[in-house]
Length: 235
Image 1 (cartoon, rainbow, N blue to C red):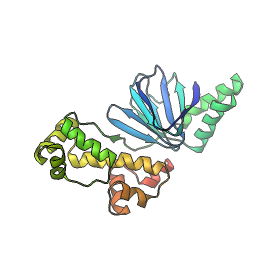
Image 2: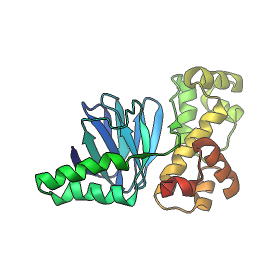
Image 3: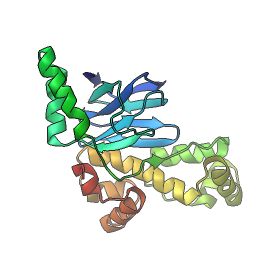
Image 4: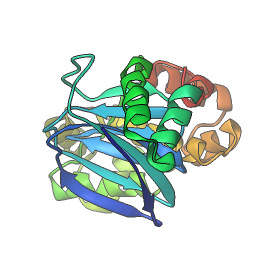
């Protein structure tokens, strides 16, 4: 088992790649996001992602310190990316393996403990496929740049040169999501990054387009299965 730290400067991106061994990755400091196909996981210090060997993925983040453990064995038999809670014990053990350089026998004992600390958490990723049509893609870029923009398809259509009906059809055809569902997913991804940076829920709610914190929390729970507080506590 190899455990290492990777310092990510501002807006670092590792293009799509894959590993021959299994990887457990998270942000020991800051926040990183990992994309597998069109699913995005935002990982603070309390949440890691198990990435099975051979699964193509990309990494975005920074400034952050990304920690990764590479394992030849798959102790739980997970065949798909799986979010895992980073408990205090897992964090301390990974610190020890990454920085302390224990003697071989001591290292082997520590490595044997780590798989027992992998506790999956029942939350979903944020799915945000990009439309292929240039008009729908322009709308998507505008929403990603400003998640609080609450323009409907009619107003967006006047900007990109398409009717509201055409844009609605393109979002479903290109992404499998309605325009409203796609915008909600984009807002959730932006919210995860802002929450991970330590901003209060009320501030995050306003920045991603919700009029009240309670409306934002309800949408967050509906999309991700837990409240913002529970997500970032690692429960």
